[in-house]
Image (cartoon, rainbow over all chains, first blue to last red; front, side, top):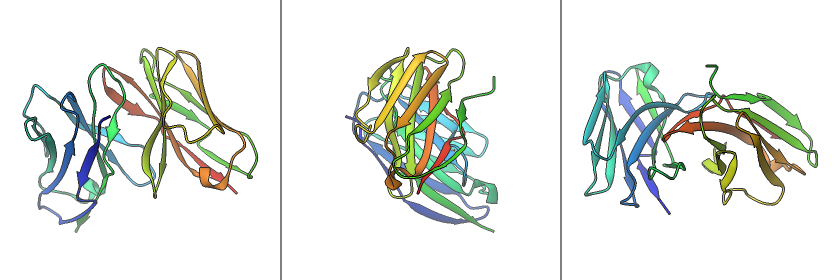
Length: 112
Length: 111
């Protein structure tokens, strides 16, 4: 089955700097890669996703890149703000199999 | 749409009691997922349904756990008998075409 590894497990960044979280996946048939943000005590919420026919996708301060050959994808947050502090999860799935395989999460802390 | 609805939001029970968690998926979504989240084990998929049929229950920890989806708008996760190690936040999520939407979760505490 699919295996997703996520690094780092914790990340502290000065406010205004950029943050990068990286994930690798094992199943080359995976073709959908969402990122979820979970604030303390709340539900995971989808913040951005990318499909395997695209190499990069951007939404304001958030971007995701995908390298299918290397089987890794990354989340980039620029101009970080205190409200970006949360746990971020990457995930992967093969379209047609609705199951998502999640990474273990990255706790991001923005230092004011 | 109100999103995925879960009840109760909090449940405190004593060891040995039966616990039933409920979920109403987003209307029109054909897949439903039950997850468990703890600090130690992270986010674990317990079971998922597609068109009300259980597809993968390999994550269900043991026979004390069971899940049903009698129709497209309702699912239950039951633990009988409950144990302290079942204490966790249980999330339900629904999906259509890959993108999963999570409910607010049920925080279960078994004393």
